[in-house]
Length: 104
Image (cartoon, rainbow, N blue to C red):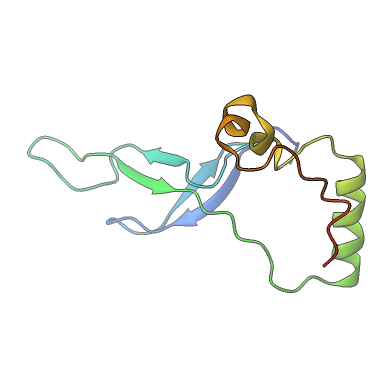
């Protein structure tokens, strides 16, 4: 499957399990709609909605950790980028935090 391909997942419906194609870049909390798979109304069935949930593995193999590390190094995606947007900074209690200096 290419990077732009939709990933099918099996989801339960009133009529039985169906395969829902999840579009690339789907984010947690996003609603995905299946038409005519929900509760029946007099003339037809209504749509059913699913909320996307992102599930992260609780234990990763050494190879998976290596691959995650490679992805982190080569990716330009910043999962915390929305925390530094101007609108977020207006409401922040701190002007700046340098996470490199924070010791665990």
